[in-house]
Image (cartoon, rainbow, N blue to C red; front, side, top):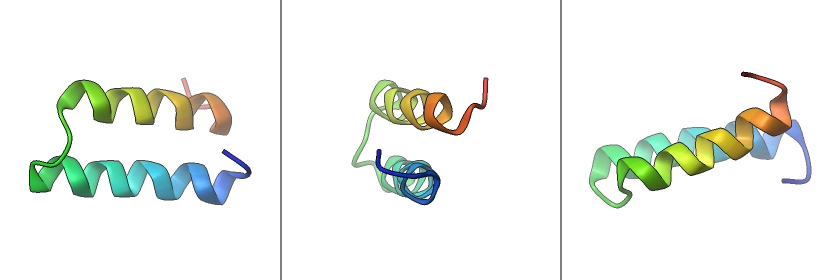
Length: 42
């Protein structure tokens, strides 16, 4: 991810797509984990 804005957006889109049924919980968790690493969130 190039910057924090992209990381935050990735998390938001992952949640949106998960809620629409387009992502599994494992896929959403992977995106959230990568974004959190970038943002420094544990």
